[in-house]
Image (cartoon, rainbow, N blue to C red):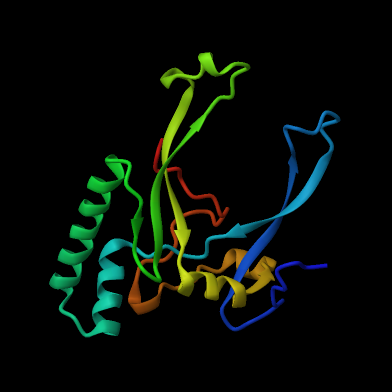
Length: 168
């Protein structure tokens, strides 16, 4: 049963491929198969600014200025350990990943493996996630490059669905 009730096909659907994997916690190292998302394209910063200009009827210079200021302000507040709520967009908060220890006294800054930014989607994104279609990527779709909206650049990667970790 599909708990999230994803629709199998929609005009704008997320794509996935089936990948073979072995989970580290599985003592028998049994091979399993999982669905992995496929990134079909990437919108760069300049193209995003142009798209916002066309949708919001705001000059591109103003859009770039506001987005740059938003990034700088997020950076300042996250460095202070402050969670930043952006209305229906969502919430950014600092987080850490650390190694567990047997006793509390052994937990210190050396057990922290990395610092990260956690994003929790707001109402508009959660609504989109509840209604988005999902479809298995076909062989012909694997070979085709999805054009970017508004004349952006095509996706340069292999479509593996992996996103680089910005914290590394």
